[in-house]
Image (tube, rainbow, N blue to C red):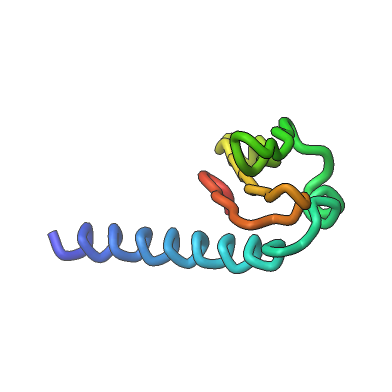
Length: 91
């Protein structure tokens, strides 16, 4: 039983490290213009422009690596600067 628990903990630690690395990588785009994101990741799968009535916009990237779907979303303000991000399945 102990090796199974240890194995699960090792996988969890590795996953946490990957998530932390991804977040540090994406943090460098905070307060940058969307052109920096596009230079790094290319044309987004979808771009929802900022709207004064509904608030900020989004750059959405969908990719696949080793059969795993990766979804990165960058939130942008009216001046098209990155103000937030989310990442799911990316490493």
